[in-house]
Image: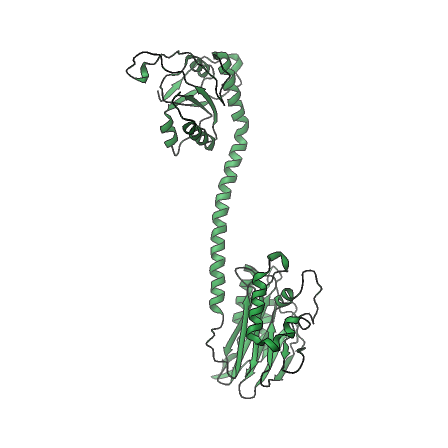
Length: 421
């Protein structure tokens, strides 16, 4: 019996407008008489499946009510699987122990008597004793009304689960894209094989997230001069990372005019970047701090201009570290800017440290007020001369890696240590 349609609805059932779909799950194809009468009164549309077939269904409409006629041979594990599957489908379930067949020889389940008594009494079923049609009708009706009242919540739960699946997939896709973007940023960093003689250049690049709002670059301007750039976009994450791409393209230290190559001075590089940022009219009001420096291989002079980035620090053997003060404001903030060029003659073993403000955050405790001398006063910078650039930067990397995220105001950290050999 795949579908069973009955009639005979009473006035007491007049509030059930639509014919409910009742799924009978039983090994036998015989419906107890009391159950058949109750289904008829409820004008139910009835479908019947064996437990194995019910569990094998993957798709299909969810019934309003599942009635399980539990055979005495059914194992508790088997019954639990049916109940769990019905719950997944959002189907309220009633378990009725099926009476054992009479002690007579029957050729097939179809020959079972249709009006066999309906014994009850098990966990999750009716009380012990016979159930008449009136009582069973009331129970089925109550379950159907409960199902109807829970339907909006079930539908909302289904939508939320689906949205959770979609959001999880989107989150995984975004995470993978961020990972690839971060890898691209790493790939665009200068190669260690760049000839910077007579300088040794040490770098540290530590994104706070998968992508960084910091960047640095080292480039040959011509046979005699090297260009160094370092920048920090406000904030971090993807918006800041995209802004650093603009920085990278803007830090060009040479150009060709009328067939001749020309070195672009540091202040002009920053003025051009400042103008580009203002022309872009960024809706999020993002800014950049940065520095551009040129090193002359022959004279050993280093000249630079900075815009809002922390003051460079000169570390000279036998002398206390000192900041190299210069004027230059935030890039992308105002149209008229003045970026002071500072020139310094590097002596053997001199180290010039260029860095973004993430260094200040890692060297000081959360909540501590930072000022222009915060890095200069730290024990880390005081040990720089004794430990050397390579060991000092490695110690800083180790310090960042062992800190919990809540222990410091996370920010991208980028450093360039330019040491004269």
